[in-house]
Picture 1 (cartoon, rainbow, N blue to C red):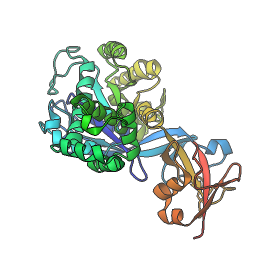
Picture 2 (cartoon, rainbow, N blue to C red; picture 1 turned 60 degrees about the vertical axis):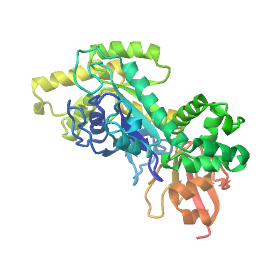
Picture 3 (cartoon, rainbow, N blue to C red; picture 1 turned 180 degrees about the horizontal axis):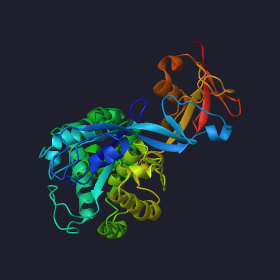
Length: 412
């Protein structure tokens, strides 16, 4: 499983999987050009592998027809690549929520994430322990159901603990402090009060006395809280195989949420050849250009040809970049904000043009953006913001919009 998570300046994503050897370490390597150990042997990933990937979005430099020089991100041909943190954690086995296998470590790593990327082996050729079996013998849908259920049970265990009845009795009488107490109870999961309230509403439990919650109520609330605080995006990996395409079509009829078809291995191959200047390839593109054919043998040329026909033309890319874009912009509702010091030149105080871009959740207020992403001292001494396009002043309660370019004016 891949974990995506939001630090103060970056989003953090966790990569997870039910079937060991489903390709999550290859996914990490493809996304970050790291060297996480890849093997068909179960439990290859013991310690979490870390990496930095990039989510891409059109850069505002195109709108203003200027050349930028980013500092906290990259800009390639008018496309801004914004860094995010990835964590590839050990595979999940049955009863992981009870500590079996590497369950305790896995779930501890999961607690840091803001979103989870579930890498599913679409060939259906792995057993529960990650060993190779006949192609198509395993149903990928079972992997999805199992993993989501296992994490939901872990949430339930943390929520309920051994003192649930005592906790329920206390806050059956003192409703005022219930949300704060629940936030404290779940503090290790990186869950905020708004998510706690949203899960109560989704579970239709906001008006039900805590002492009257049934076992089913607790389980429902834990599941909805997980869906809100740690949503899971399924990646159908190894989509370059014929059996995978068949399984993908079947899976779409069973699973109600989004599934991104992908080939981590193909993305890794393209990025390595690009790094070696054998081809020109921008991650997420639906094509590449061979610039040094003499560096390729016939087998490599055939491999590239297959990638182009079976993946890039058929699916519009390898799917890896689509994973990040859908996870961040569609599931996490992130928007891009560019802080500057000069609203005319769009520079910082050192003359760098559009140096920084930050990902924040849609609905974020200017004052919260300044404190969390820029500098707490600026927030303490805030006077007003200035919109670079309209030159209008913005109050601290201004709700940020996607691709806002803003100057922050303070007393210091």
